Image 1 (cartoon, helix red, strand yellow):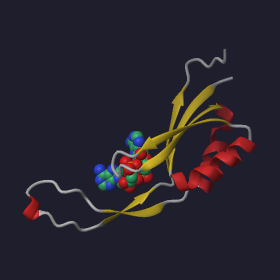
Image 2 (tube, rainbow, N blue to C red; image 1 turned 90 degrees about the vertical axis):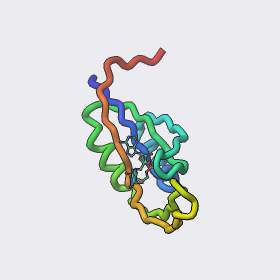
Image 3 (cartoon, rainbow, N blue to C red; image 1 turned 180 degrees about the vertical axis):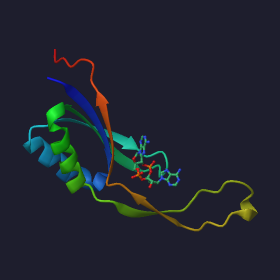
Length: 109
Ligand code: 2BA
């Protein structure tokens, strides 16, 4: 059985429903509290160890449950204070950022 490790960074607002459906479908999940480097806001990283043949099923579910959203960010000042104009910028976050990795060995002890 070939295993893969999927690490999916998802928005907190999507994670509850996503974890529920993945658990129902018997995917094994570890949920990690994480923080985005750019927005410096909380998000959630799911570690999901999965058989290679279930990868597409998993990606389909993630795609269905995770929606892109707009977030407004006000950049922090950088440089001289009198030159700083704090205007908000809109960024689009998500649906999900997903990494699929090979697993050399998988053991439960
Ligand atoms: P954040 O780093 O907080 O990024 C949130 C959103 O801000 C990103 O959404 C992107 O639209 C925007 N963004 C990020 N860096 C930017 C920059 N230097 N300039 C302008 N806009 C920027 P997503 O791309 O959907 O990413 C959502 C979250 O996924 C990220 O939160 C981060 O936690 C994670 N992520 C994204 N790419 C990653 C990567 N290559 N490696 C590890 N984690 C990643």
